Length: 437
Ligand SMILES: *[C@@H]1O[C@H](CO)[C@@H](O)[C@H](O)[C@H]1NC(C)=O
Ligand SMILES: *[C@@H]1O[C@H](CO)[C@@H](O)[C@H](O)[C@H]1NC(C)=O
Ligand SMILES: *[C@@H]1O[C@H](CO)[C@@H](O)[C@H](O)[C@H]1NC(C)=O
Ligand SMILES: *[C@@H]1O[C@H](CO)[C@@H](O)[C@H](O)[C@H]1NC(C)=O
Ligand SMILES: *[C@@H]1O[C@H](CO)[C@@H](O)[C@H](O)[C@H]1NC(C)=O
Image 1 (cartoon, rainbow, N blue to C red):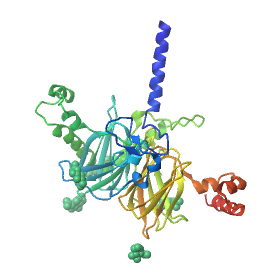
Image 2: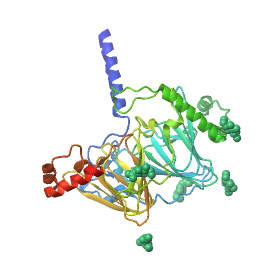
Image 3: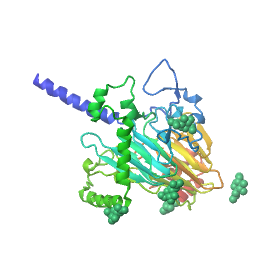
Image 4: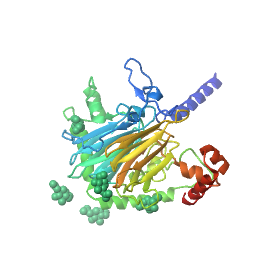
């Protein structure tokens, strides 16, 4: 009996571990894509798929994310979420994208996404952001973000964004689920149907029964803002001393590898572990392709570890190209900010169908996980895009460099046959890519 008990416990422990590893994010796709169709009579995890041969580029497309949304509401904010209900091609791909518009002093109030980590870049405004770690520490991590600053909100944690500028604010976020879900804490707790008993809430929130929730929760975050924002130089000084302390605590094990990275003691984490500045600054495109990708993955933002998402800015010169490549571990969801970007991806064997689209500012497009894709600025002006990618470390395989510029080179015989090219052409390409990659 005793032995059985131990076995059962061990089994439960292993199952618990396995399920936490397996279901940490959206399930992995089992095919190139699975464009959603709505069947109100049937339910599955996600959506049913349309016949892949009927899929078109428009299933991966959404226009107009450049257009400011109305913030004429009591909070002064407006979230435009492009999830699987807006872009059917996102089904099974584990990612979505949001634009948030803020009025001067507009607030996106405390909320959680039960199924997604969020990675946000500020385009306009000064956004005071924060999240709170879970029980028992409940630590608040806050940061004042300027245009180009990037911040991570880990999966399921309560967080908020508040535009402390007297001008409008705009942000874009990648979210690590096709359907991140939204729980606005105040509305969820104090505005449920039917209502939660006031006795429960009074006790839970230690409130007098006459105090309204708006005052208790939103005023709380406003109070924290005024307290913390008042002295940025003090904040910066404090964070740099934290950095020094962290370095002391960091231990490097060169002989041991894990899936992802080792974690720092959670009590030593600070807001700066989730932060990256300067993504508003144009990158140099003075190279032969006329493009420059700035990827904020786990090597740039240590707090992304285990959270399954990253963010990229791409700068394009006039007619600049981001050449055919794949991300072996991530779907990419891209929004155009400037330029006219001709994009495409190719489905896998045996169909190898090319899906293309001409994107204007505000247009959004999906590149499904692992498929070869490209972005080409066909405008005579510079181009800028932002992308969410569904991995902390999406990986990059630039097809030409990978195939023709490998170390050591792939046998020209192999490539000649594979690409149906003259051997001289292959050898020429190998020389080109070997030196340029
Ligand atoms: C958000 O903006 C859209 C378009 O401007 C508008 O139709 C919608 O009512 C706004 N939502 C809120 C909550 O203000
Ligand atoms: C906005 O704030 C800036 C600096 O804080 C100030 O110079 C400007 O007068 C303010 N504008 C308005 C319309 O309040
Ligand atoms: C801000 O903090 C710095 C460093 O703690 C201090 O020297 C400075 O006087 C403070 N400024 C204000 C306006 O409180
Ligand atoms: C990208 O831009 C950065 C900053 O402008 C520059 O240092 C880097 O060399 C550029 N990379 C390429 C490939 O041009
Ligand atoms: C860029 O293209 C636009 C429209 O296609 C044209 O009117 C303009 O003259 C062009 N500018 C340059 C610098 O080529």
